Image (cartoon, rainbow, N blue to C red):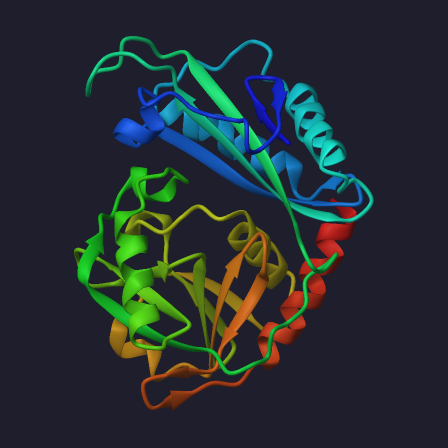
Length: 281
């Protein structure tokens, strides 16, 4: 089942207009949300990020879009897909209503929610071999818009094709200043000694929910400190560990970049703390 503007449709009967602005102009923002046994993980963070994204995109936020209303809409689609007592991945998409060309005719919005099952209730560390490479054909533009979850993802798509064609598990994206920004599907962290480093938002990385949680966790670890600073490609092979974070997989350790192989000890520590935060959210 799919929720479109509050109405439920069977997935094979759900449809969008060819004038949908998310389709026609990439005029849409979205949240990817993890729901476990009827509990929305990190819901407050998702809600406020969605509201901030809509404001930045100058979308009109309906008066009905309270945290309670959207939570009820999400849990309804979870129930309708028989996922209330298991785990689910939700995608909540907001697009501007059809009309206009580059300049929209209205700032009113439509929304769509769909759900898919997930295999695991909480985050498990995938310690299998995982190799990444830089994608240098196109760049992420540093700035505020790149921090949002929009469906303008041409760079990610082309990088994903490059990774697939060259047997890499993921690619790392660069901004126009040639700094490493993020992976295809998540934020990037390096561990160098007792420093855990991640690119700053001003470099154009996604303002990830899990990224924020990892920052909170590391600030409480006595043996490590967090550093939000630009990462040069030359730093990648000097790191002791490298890992990627997003709200669905949690933490994915990178095992190899070019000739460098990495440990996973810090990632193992962080995934346990992340699960604790998820249970308490």
